[in-house]
Image (tube, rainbow, N blue to C red; front, top):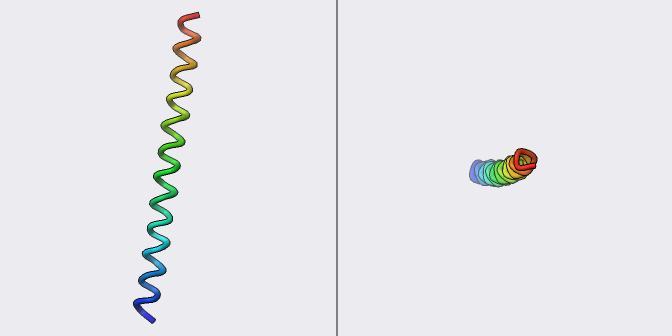
Length: 44
């Protein structure tokens, strides 16, 4: 029973880490897009 609960918490931990990594990637992409748009506006 304890090992089962432990594995469940580990799975949740892995899922949370994956979500955080995805959110980080999305934020990086958004910042890149905003910066490129800003540079484009500055060039204009």
